[in-house]
Amino acid sequence: MKRKPLVTGNWKMNGDTVANRALLSALRSALDAELLGRIDVCVCPPAPYLVPVAAALDGSGIAVGAQNVAAWDNGAYTGEVSATMLADLGIAWTLIGHSERRALLGETDADVATKAQRALAVGLGVIVCVGETLAQREGGETESVIGAQIDAIAALAAKADPARFVVAYEPVWAIGTGKTATPEQAQDVHAAIRARLDRAGAPADRIRLLYGGSVKPASAQALFRMADIDGGLIGGAALVADDFAAICRAAVPA
Ligand code: PEP
Image 1 (tube, rainbow, N blue to C red):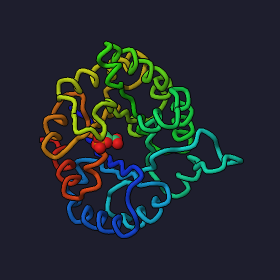
Image 2: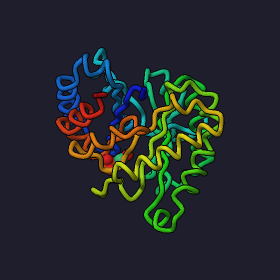
Image 3: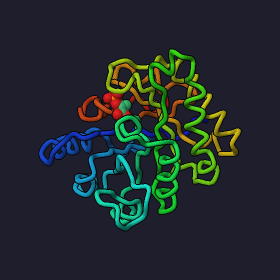
C-alpha cells in the first residue's frame, strides 16, 4: 500500500498580496474536502506572506510551509527565521536544502542536517530536497551525490516521526527548465533513496518521497503512479491555480 500522497507548492520568491489572495481563493474552491481527505497539500510562500497565507487558508485543510529555516535557535542571527518562530506561527512544514539555496547560498549537507534537526525538534515537518546537477548525472555521479545527501540526514530520518519526514528528489537539471525526468528515471532514484534510508534504519516504507522538477498537469500522473513516488514538489506550476489543482488531482490514488 502506498503512502498518503503529498503535493507541495514552492512559490519561491514570487507573489504579492493581491496575487496571493486570488491564487488562494481559487485553490480553496478547487481543492475540496473529499480530495484533501485523500492527499495532503501544502503551499510554501515567501516568509513575509506566511501569516497572511495561513490566515487565508484557515479551515481549508491546505497546510502552509516555509521555504527555509535557520540553522540556529533564536538569538543574534540578523535576517534569519527560526524553527521556533515558525512553530509559534502554526506553520506545519519547512522546505530544507532546496537546490537554489545549495547553489546560490552555499548550503551544505551539514547545514541541511542542522536545519532539519532544529525543525523536527519543535514539531515542524521537514521536506528535505536532494538532487544532482546535469554534470553530475552525465559524469555517472547521481548515486554518490544523492547518497551523500541522504546519508547526512539518515540518522534524523531514523528517529523522526515518518509522517513529518519527507524527502524531495529534485534533479537540478529539471528545476525550472521544462525538462522533466522520465517517470522511470525518477523511480530509479526514488527506489535508491528508499533503499538507502532503509539501510540506515529509517522507517523507509513510511517516509514520503516527492519528485520535483518541471512537473506540469500533463506529466504529473505518470510520475505519481510510480511505486516509490509519493507526490510532488511543484515550482512554476504552483503559481497557476488550475495547474496546481490539476497536479493535486493527479496525485489522488486510483
Ligand atoms: C522547485 O522549485 O522545487 C521546482 C521543482 O520548480 P519547477 O517545478 O518550476 O521546476
